[in-house]
Structures are given as structure tokens and as C-alpha cells.
Image 1 (spheres, helix red, strand yellow):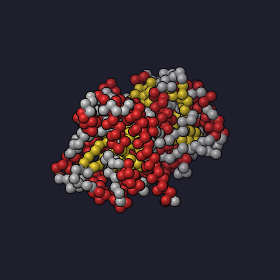
Image 2 (image 1 turned 60 degrees about the vertical axis):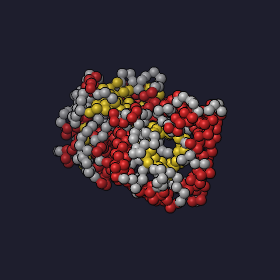
Image 3 (image 1 turned 45 degrees about the horizontal axis):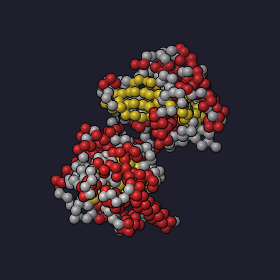
Image 4 (image 1 turned 120 degrees about the vertical axis):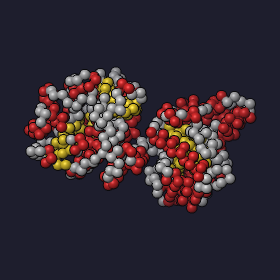
Length: 638
């Protein structure tokens, strides 16, 4: 049973990409962290396109190794053959974007984990489970990793798998250039040519740039190089030609490259070429392994390469299958694809890594309410943070994985946020000045100077806005400007965005009003990942709200309903109404859970443990109530 489409083998690194563009690597001040290494990129890129991919490699027993493993899991890559090396560090690559032609690159690979892959890491049964084995050229540069790579390829052939080689020639990684020449793409070498040629007969598909075929063929004349490779192998040869596209050769090499099989290309602005070949290879493998002809396979590959050269980073730039299909049908609107709002919205929404089909959030991000409580009881505000740690304990004792979450502020709840990090909880953080209308963001957030950059990537940006369709033009314009700026900052920093809409005092929204506000938010270019809305009691009202969201954003995460300090019975009634609608994923409730315990704890009537138990009991009860409502709705639909 072939339960894998693709196994790649070789490099796995962490890419540290300079955030500043247009300057030297020496002048870059901050970096974004992504997974990297050609086989790792290909495994992730092909998984995004729907292939069942796996990676054979090694990572260090440290933070970077764990990051690679965790990110591959998020991308849907099988990591059962990713070994942890207790002695070696994970490889790093530090790189930047200087201009359209210069991409400075430093490899930190001295005795790195992935260069310790051995034949013992190649499991025969695992290889037998794949339809294709893909190797890359770097791991033919050293006897130990070469032996492991060739064992995997030969076993693939033994068990009827297709085999592919991405030549992926980096002179620096073959020891032909100094550390400062990582971006160099070609240095002639008889030894490298000989080594590559000794393996070419093992592959059904060989892919490379013109320079890479030069090294494989032993000549800088591209047609002669292709003919030299053809003498050794019957593989399909795919020659990448940058902005011109690519051509495939199934048989004899003709008199010009233009006589090869070509696929539709895409005229786009070049922003970053690093990793484009891996994106191209992901698309090519998708076409090849799903039965497309070479013209269509090259069209898919060219599109994936176009996405890559237009965005920051390697793997983060690669498209999902949904995004690819949309692009192939619609075509290019803005040659700078990263500046195409419609395309970027699909890219963002369809590449989010963690699914939350059911979400029960304990919200204790309140600030003014706790300040007032501390004042009434004569307590120091320093105690607010202590109580929020108790709230976190109550949440975590109720559940962590499976859709439990918290809303907690950074002003008083910083210690709770730190303790909750990495636990599996959904975590959201407020950004608004409490009670502000028009809405303002907290000055301490530093939004104007990129304060969100300090947030962990798994934190969700939450903002509360008192919004009504009848608001005057002035207040509406001021609120919308703040919301747009905050939404754009969230996306720039790769953070999900939750918009909480509540009725202004004395102005009820209802279903029709909420739907009108939602439409206005979309009209001004804001696409919240999450909506937090007031409970509605009528099916008709929920239908209006859900339709308003779904017709604007089919990829939205969904809605959570707020509590407004309601009683348990009132909340259960709101759950019963909301649970009928799949777009409503759960709740985000605070005061109903913590208010009584907080009052008793601040005046000294109960201990820490008693406060935790009281809140845990109420939170767990609401979680069970929501789950029961959802279950009953599902059963009634059968």
C-alpha cells in the first residue's frame, strides 16, 4: 500500500530572513524565522498542494530542531523519518534581499545534524510506502550522506517508486567557494560533474537551471550539457530558465531550447529568487504525480515559482492548492503578487496551520473591571496579575488541547501569558483602550512603531469596537482608520485578528444591525480571522449574520459569542440558538466565570485554591453546556 506520494531526503535548516530589503546583510537589523533547506521546502510545498509528503533528515536536539519538526507537522508533512541528533546542531541559513539580482546568503552547516544522515536512517518499509523518492544534489557532496541518499533512491526503484533529482547546485556546499559566497550559483568542477554523472541513471526526472545542467553535463553550453546528461540517462530533463519559464525534454535534445515542451509562464515582478526552485519543484511534482502531461505540470510549476519570487521567505511563500487553482483560473492582476489583496487574503487564509473547529475561551482580559475591584477592596493593583494567574490555572485544569483558550491582557496578565505559552491553548490579547469610543489602541502597544512584532506568532490580536450602522461619519471614519491600521499590522506580523463588535450604550444591534456592520468591515478591506459577537436569540438573526460573513470570506475561522456578564441560564439559551450554525465555533466568556470568585478573593474571603476551583467549575460547566448543545444539534440533523 503506497500511503505516501513523496519522500524527500536531505537538508533541513532554519532560515533567518532579513526583514529589511534593499541593503547589505551587514545592515539588516531583524530577521524572520522559517523552515528551509531544499528537500524540506519541497516536502512542505508539495504538502500544501495536497500531496502526502514525508522528509528524511536529521535535526538537532534543541530549539531550532524542534521548530523544524513542529512546523513540518503544521504543514502536514510526515516527520516519522526526521531523526533527532543528540550531538549536532540544526543547520542555519542567514539571508537577505538586497535587490532583484543580489541575495546575500550565509550557510551555518559545519558538522550540522542533516549532514549526519546515514544508511541506518533509511528504513526499507518506509521507502516502500512511497510513490516517489526525491533527492537533491547537496547530499551527494559527502560520502556518508551520499550513501544514505542513494540507498533511498535505489530502494525506491526496487519498490516501483518514481525517482527525481533536483540538482540544487550550491558551489559553497561542495567546498568550492568561501563562506561569504553562499549566493553563488556556478563554479565549474570536474569532480562535481563526475559525482553527479555517476548517479544520473538512477532517476526518472532530473530538474535544474541552465547553470545546474552545466555542472551535470560538464560544459557551459546548455544544449551540449543536456546532451551529455542524455547520454547517461533516459530521465525526463526539465531545464529552468528563470523568467522565461522552463522546458522539458522526454527524448533526444533538439537544436534549441525553445523546441522542448513548455508550459504557460507568468509575467510577475521579481522580489526574491531564493527558494523559487523548490517552489517550482513542488508544483512540478504535484503535476507529475497526479497524471498531468508535461505542459500542464510545467504550468503548475511556473505558477508556484511565480508565487515564490514575489514573496518573502521560501516555504511561507508557497501556495495552497486552493490558492493555486484560483490563480490559474484568474491570472495575474498585479505583477507584484504580494501586493494583490485578493490573492494575499486567500494565501493567508488557506495556509493557516492549526484548525479550531470548536473553541471555548475563558476571557479575563478585562482591565478596568479589575482596577475598579481592586479599588473597592483597598487592594494593590499588583494583585490583579496574581489573580490572572489563578484564572490561567482554572483554564488549564479544565483543558488545554482540543479547543480550550484564554483571552488575557499584557498589562496585568503578562505572567499568565508567559506561563500559557506553548501549552496548546488558543491565546488572544486585547489591544484597545478599555471603553474607548471611537476605539483607540493602547499607547503601550506601540502600534505605530511595530509593537506587535514583540508578540509570539500564536497570539491572536483582539480589538473591541463599539460600532453601529447609525454612527455619524466622523466617529465611523476614526474607528475604521484604527481598525484598518491594526488589521494591517496584524497581517504584517503574521498574527491572526479577532474583531469584537458590541452595541454602543442604548443602541442595540440585533441580527440586521450586526450583519450591516460586518458588511461594512469587509467593504473597507478588513478580513477578521475571528468574529466575537453578541448573542442572538432568533435563528433568523443568526442566519443574517452568518450569510454576511460567508458571502465575503468563505475561509473565515468563525464566530465566538461573548457573555456580557449574563447568568448561566441566559448563556445556555444563547448557546442553544448559536449551536445550530456551523460558523459559530464556541464562546469567549469572562465575568460569568470569574466575577464572584474575584470579589471573594480580593476581599480575602477565599484562598487561591478556592478561587481556582470556583472558576474551574463554572468554566467547565459552560464548556460542557456548549458541547452538549453542539452535539444535540448534530444529532438532530442526522
